[in-house]
Image 1: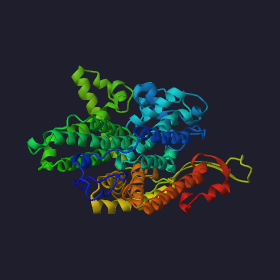
Image 2 (image 1 turned 90 degrees about the horizontal axis):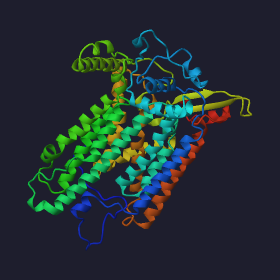
Image 3 (image 1 turned 45 degrees about the vertical axis):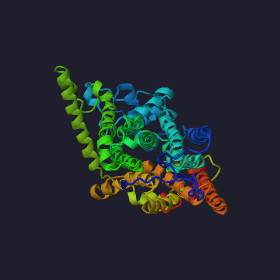
Image 4 (image 1 turned 90 degrees about the vertical axis):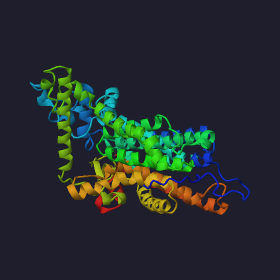
Length: 537
C-alpha cells in the first residue's frame, strides 16, 4: 500500500455541497462524523451477530464425531488444560472421547517419553480447551470456543465496516454476509485453528481502524489549538491504546498460527502510512520525517515487541512444567535462576527451529489439498465429514460437512476486489488500500510456499482473507449506491435494488448449501446436486 492516505468523504456524506458552502474543515477531512444514531450503531451489528451465533450454535454437537483435524486439536486442547502442554494419546483415543472416557493419554515411566511434538503454537488449543473444561470432552465442548469467536468476529466486522464507511446499514451488511459465508460457518463449528487465526487478525485490523480515528482526532485537536506555532513535526500522539491492543491481537494471531507474522508486517506498514496521511492532512510540512520522529519508536514497540512478548507468553505452560516436548527440564533445574532461564530459552528456541523445519518441509500429499490460485474460485474444498446413513427415506443418503465458501459471496468478492484495485489506483482511498493489503497478505505469500516449498495446503487456509473480501463487497456497495445526499434518486433506488438482490442471493445460496455444511441427513441425489464442480466431490 502506498504511503499516500488522502481522506475521502464517507458514503453517507455528500460528495458535493452547494456552491456557496464552505470547504470542509481540517477536522472534517481528518475525522468525518459518524452519522445516524450511536445506539443503532450498536443494536444493528449486535442483532446481525446474534443471527450468526444462532446459526453456529444450533446443533453444534452435530456431527457427533471427530471431524477432520479435530483428531489432533481436540485432544491437544484437552492436554493443555490438564497438563499445561500437549501429550501423546493412546490408540483409539477418538472412540474413547466419544464414549465419554477422558483417559486418553499415554502413561510413561519418564515424563519426557510422553511429550508430544506439535507444530502449532498453543493459544488456539488453550481456547478450545476452555470449552472442553466447561462443557466436557465432547463435540459441543471442543467446538464451543470456535463458535463463540466466530460469532464475535461477525460483530467486529460489522462495527469495523460501519467505522470505515460511516454507514450503519453497510456495517450490518458486512456482518450479515460474513454470517452467511459457508467457510466461516463450517470453521466456526469445527475445532480447528483457522477461525481463531482469522478472529485475531480481524480484531487487530479493527483496533488499527479505531486507532486511525483516535489519532486523527488528536491531530485535529492539535491543529485547532496550536497550528499557528507548529514546529514542522506536529504533535506526539501519546501511547495510543488502540495500537497497543492491535499488537496484542497480532501476537495472539501468531500464537495461534505462524502466518500471523505476515499480518504483523502488513499492518505495521499500513498504520504508519495512515499516520503519514494524517500529518499531511493537518498541514505538517515534513510528514515522513515527522512520523519517523513522533510515531515510529512507539509503533515499533506496539506492533513488533508486544506481539513477540505475547507469543512467548503463550508458551507459559511449556516453560513452567517438565512435560513439554524438548523441555530439557533436568538441565534447566540443575542450576540457579539464571541457568534455569538460559537453559529454558535455549531449548525453546531449538524447538521453534524444529517447527520451522517441519513447515518448510511439509510436502505430503492429501486428497483434499489445493493451491492458493484455486482458492478464490472454490475449486477444491475440503470434505470435513461424510457418512452414508440409512435414515432419510431414500435408497441412498448422505450426511456431510463440506468446508467451502458461499459461491455468491466469493465470486462477487472477486469482482469487488478488482473494483478496489481500480478505486485505489484512481483515488488512493485508504479503505480500498486497507482491504487490498489485508486480502493480499493472507493470500499471496502462499504462492511462494506452494511454488518454492511445494507445501501441502488447503482451502481453509484462506480464512483470514474472508473478512477483507466481505469488506471489499461492502465498499463496492457504497460505490454502487452513491452518497446519500449527492447521488441522484434514481441511482440510489437502482443501487439499493442491486445491493439488496446480491444480499438476498447470498442468503438463498447459503440456505441451499446449508444441509452439506451442517451434516444434515439428506438423499444422496440432493447432496450431489449441491456439488457445484466435479472437484467438490
